[in-house]
Image (tube, rainbow, N blue to C red; front, side, top):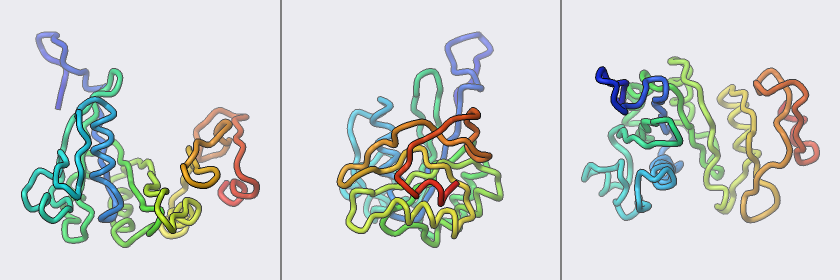
Length: 210
């Protein structure tokens, strides 16, 4: 991990380093999301494909052949003045222990949910593991362009099945391409935003989730 060098060189100060895990049920889009992060941060100059076996983090021949993550893989990228160590973890139930080992060292996690399948069995397992190690999470509802996708259903399942208290930072508006949510963020105990902050939500939707 990059650190502050004794010689006073250009090594990244430890306060600017974050270990962030990508966790989810299998096939929710962990490795694909990791590839996008690496690409848009400038760490990678091509988008790897799970189907083609060309992703950066699934480097083992068995992973490339089977199209799944077996081993946790760490890779570093830069964003502005921070160094982010991304840990892409397995999603298959057989490799749960591998995920737990990673969670012990994380500063935070991005937990990915397929908006078609919603909360799945391994989602629940990983959520409990993250609770055990007090890992803060950002929930990323993925695959909103798929037939049968539902942002609201998946959001509700995070509350009802996982006991989460999520605050929606971005919601899909209209049909087809997901859009950004207009306005400002809501005031509330869970939001952490300044008093008086407000937001314009689709009628009736926000009141159900305050």
